[in-house]
Image (tube, rainbow, N blue to C red):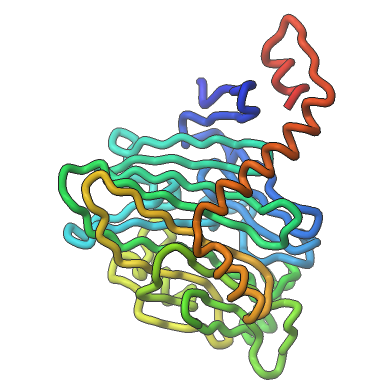
Length: 322
């Protein structure tokens, strides 16, 4: 069965079906910051070390595979219907939900269309930076204005050590807290475990934040999952985490006119409050994302173009050249 193909001109692998046999992942990152992202936006991020510098969680070998990740939820505020900018985690019927993933050189673009709303989500780590950017363009292809609740979401680790975070619940569930400030949520440590080097933030530029949540269990709800979180179904209520499981959820309530596109820029990293605020503010002009994307392409394509081969096998050429 065919799930995608190589685009050698743009040095991308294009995934045309989201229900791949397993998570097909791409690598994003700089020398100081790394990220793994799948074709359905699953994956994790880390500073310096994937074992000891985790920022967000990812559960390996679970029955519900490839979760959690870098999620953007959209809800029609009038009908209550909701979906995600990547096929997962909500998982709408592929008869109605159209999507494509383009894994490129240090960036990934996931496009989707559902209920006459089109999204294009670009994920990347800027060249030589220590944080990641998600630029999400939302276009209303309907003939009428649409009122949407748009929510960016991450599940923070409580401890940056991957093993301690997953298995040492007697420790990891008693160390973290979250707070909201202006346009970002920070996960830090409670008074007994303060360590500024382990702080994380999740913020939004380009649009305002109307509601927020920093408590994963409040966001997901009892006996629910990321496919049907109560925080999306009923709206966020400003819950924050203290000695539980941390998350970052930022909701923007917007009206998108017929034919209009609105741009959201979510930023995730491991920084203190002052530096996080400066980074987010630097994306108030969302066009900076396009410049940073071109920098990545220029850098990586320049390296790859130093050695190119041409054989009788196009697939072999694509694998070797890119």
